[in-house]
Image 1 (cartoon, rainbow, N blue to C red):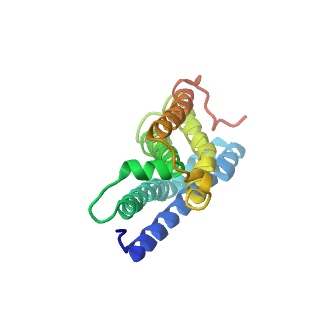
Image 2: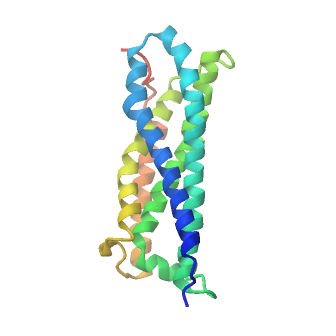
Image 3: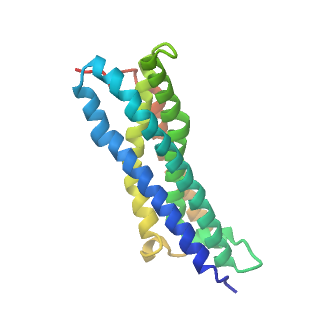
Length: 211
C-alpha cells in the first residue's frame, strides 16, 4: 500500500524547485551576462569588480547546486518508497516506469560535479590571483572553468525538460525492461563523458581576456 506522504512530498518538491531556480538563474547570469560584461571592461576595472561581484555570487551558486541535489534525492527516495509501499524499496520497478527522471538525475549530478570540483576551485584560484593571495593561475584554469560552466548551461536544457516532463509525459514513464533502461543510461553517460573530456583536454585559452 502506498504511503500518504503528500505534505512531505510538497515541501521537498518546493525546496527542490526553489533551489533549482536559484542555481539555474545564477548559471545563466554567469554565462549570458557576466562573461560578456567582463570582456568589455579593462583589466584594472575587472580586478576591482570581479572579486566583489563573483565571491558572494559563487557562494549562493554552489550552495544552490548542493541544496538542489540534496532536496532532489530526498524527494526521489520518497517517491521510490511511495511507489513500492511501506515495506519495500522498489528501485528497479521505479526505474522501469520513470526512466526519464533517472536520466535527468544523471545530468544534474554531472552539473553539480562541475560546480563543486571544476568551476569553484578554478574561481578560487582566479579570484585569489586578482586579490594577490596566490599567483595568477595558468590559462588552462579559467578555460576549464569556462567550458564547465558552458557545458552546464547546455546540459541544463535537457535536464530541466526531463525534470518537468517526466511526471506528466507518458513517453517518459512508459514501463520498459531494466536492461533497456540500463543501456539508455549507459549511452547517456558516454555522451556526458565526451563532454567532460572536452572540458579536460581543450587547448588552454583564457576566455576572460579582453580582445
